[in-house]
Amino acid sequence: MQPRHSLLSSFGGATFLAIASLSSVQAAPLLIVGNDEKLLWDDQGKPIVSPAGKDSVVILDVADPESPKIVANLPLKNSVVGPPVNLAIDPTNSIALVADSIDVSKDGDAFKQAPDNKVYVIDLKANPPKLADTVTVGKQPSGLSFNPAGNLALVTNRADKSISVLSVKGTDVKVIDTVDMGDVVSHVEFTPDGKRALATKFNAHKVSLLDINGDKVTYTKLDLPTGQWPYNVAVAPSGKIALTADNGGAGSSDGSVDTVSVVDLELNPIRIIDRVVVGDGPEGLAISPKGDVAVAVILAGSNNKSAYFYKRNGSIAVLRIDGKKVTKVGDVELGGLPEGAAFTPDGRYLFVGNYLDQDLSILKVNGTEISDTGKRFKLPGHPASVRMSTH
Image 1 (cartoon, rainbow, N blue to C red):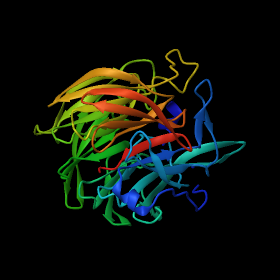
Image 2 (image 1 turned 30 degrees about the horizontal axis):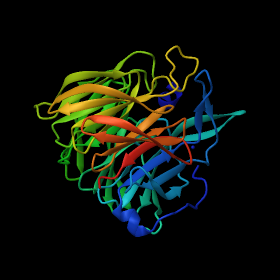
Image 3 (image 1 turned 45 degrees about the vertical axis):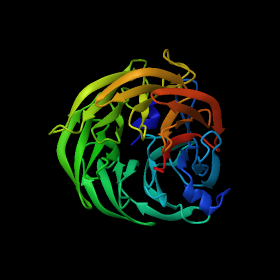
Image 4 (image 1 turned 30 degrees about the vertical axis):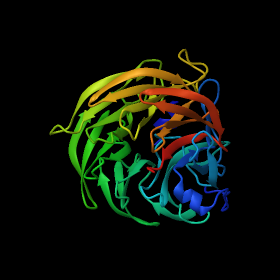
């Protein structure tokens, strides 16, 4: 899957489908999914790049997790190039942000990918939800997150080696600062108290600490050594630990096992205290709102049929969290090239996007036991990223 992640698609149309009332959109837990229709792979794992114009961002009502309902399908460009956390819903279910990482242009008889620099603001209170604004940030915006108060967001700019700081006042979203990180950064996540954040330095194999005072974000220059190619970072609800998904293959699987690193956030300074072997090519990463279980999404070579380590389906590695001890307790097979993962706010269900199958796996969570319900939700595209609302 090298092309997806080693690369440092146009907003097609202005209409979208709405299939629910505003009241149901606001009341129900929401799942947001970015579908990328610009990138697939042939049997040798070589990228097949298509022109932009068919991407979409789908918002799902998951009040009944086993029977999701599409409430909006917006023709917004997004990309599978990067970690599957390039979108998010704010804590009040008022807006969503979607990072547009990659553009596609004609290159002779073929198409090529290059960094874009847009973040879309979706108004979830509108009836029906709609695109409210487009914000210009740094090159190749990727993993992003809201702070717990919902008035600040951070977006990593991979090609610019920086983080954009966004002030959020309803749909009024503005860039108020840019933090130079010195290395390629792929995702950033706030701690539960909103006073710190962690950013993964993908190429440098590190996770970095940011201090936050109001809307002032400062890079502390504290970098911790993760496993190879950390893509995502997730912070436990307790605020005591964080996890990084150490992809191991520069954005792809390579046949060898890889790890999740455990960061102790209570130590001063913070530090890595453990690594857990999870499988080949962890990319998606999520911790349950209950804080007792996490999952790392395993690529397993499922987009390269010619590879010796090819598997038709990827999986999740299930991780039990007991205080600061993290232990792998199982695996659950999913679909082709699984990407993003998101728990429901009550922690009872888990959704994982299967990129090649164009659907969502719906899994049941019972404590630290996660099982496949056998139900899939068909999507109008290839799910590159998945995030859940907090309530």
